[in-house]
Image (cartoon, rainbow, N blue to C red):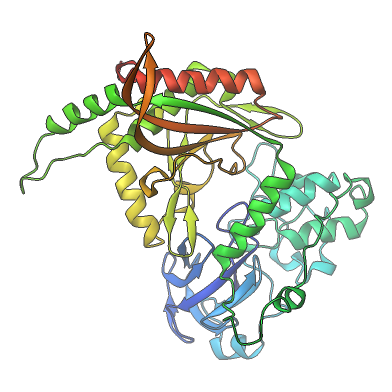
Length: 437
């Protein structure tokens, strides 16, 4: 039976991707685990591996194709004993997906070849207690339509339940109709059309540069964040002189590698990451994520750190940052930043997290308010440390001061709780030994 190669969902939010290039040609023999193609998402370039062996019979989506929908057919592998030319000539549009390794699935002969023919409950997709394989989109559609995934037969790779299976289940009438699902959210007001905007400017006075997938995703998520998350902001000034002294002492004590370079060089941003992580542990009610049904209260402080890359930004996550030393955080961030700029981060390295840090201090920005990155409930915007005149014991003195602004999701972190969190952060920054013990 031919094996369909589908555009994979490389993240929970991925809807489309670009097929950068094929690493195999039609007629090439492939083995399980062989890299077949490279897929570009808005954040990184990922590899698609073969799930079985055979011959690459047909490339359906050629190199360089953009905006290929998740689960779309991109190629076909002829299984052992099949004529690759015959399989390839058939186009593969109606070829059933590979059903091998499908847990407790119906016999392959009964597997539907098109979504319209897929019965909702022809056979249970998994026995009791067995793991259900389903795409994030399929799970969301099933939840909205009140469908028991255990009653759906998957037609994706290895029996994975995909979007078409859920739609077929709804159409088959064995599940609750979509009309009973929660009403869709109202669409955000549309802005001016492209043509209207262009009329404001003289013809020939500008160059049109198409948006790439990263810029489109950033635009969509920022609009979503600002229209669905009720932001509010808290700003404090933190004195840095004690921290700067501790930083100098730590860096001076760094051991040297064989080439004579220090094994680590801690930055102010590393202290900021650590301080926010510890502060979230001290104020655990703020270490949360909002969902419509529940509040997710996180056990660890997984801190995302905004990194600027060509065409946009990405937020790699320092996992369990409260448990890591400053040197470990520093080295991990340097590795993340280098691989982020090369678009080599893995999805699990930049997805999730419980809060985030955005630092524009190195650009001389005094203070700003950052947009929350879902599913986080908070983000800390960090400005530049600068010498300012402050009053101590009734007398003016010069101190190094850094302004920070905490953006919070008011549904999850209200004013008093946000103030408690940012006060804990300020205390740790001004007394850095508190985060080292």
